[in-house]
Amino acid sequence: MSDDEGREEFRKVFDFFDKNGDGSIDAKELANAMRALGGNPTDADIRLMMQEADGQANANGKIEFNEFCDLMANHVKSKEEEEESLKNAFKTFDRNGDGRIDKKELKAALTKIGFSQLTEGEVDELFNQADTDDNGFIDSKELIAVMTNSIN
Image: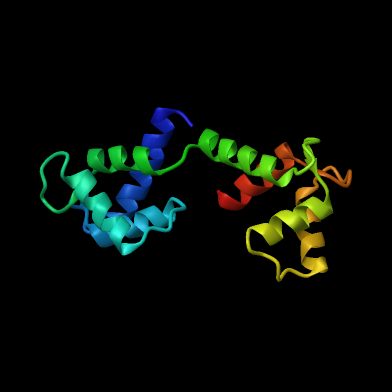
């Protein structure tokens, strides 16, 4: 995503949540905007973000568009950063280091990260969704494609 595309996306989100059209958003509107951009901020996160963004310029208790852009640039992962995180996750799932994950490795990875309650059928369904070329393995590109499509 280019800087112009990013600003355009931020403008759409900002304008949507600037309900009264005064050119600024408050803490509640910021929380809604962050959720719309894929985040899941806590109340404490929002308070800190309001202080971070609003304290940079006029400290009026509201965030104007330029402050919003600066804040989002610091808190929203780029597509490249998302992909890099997923590549790193893939490496931890790929226990034998062969560049692909079989069902056994997927099951072990899911168990390790807290999904031990999944049935074999559920693991099969997840695996089949990610194994887009039907070769019996998931490679990093397949995992990234599935995860970024489910995130975006």
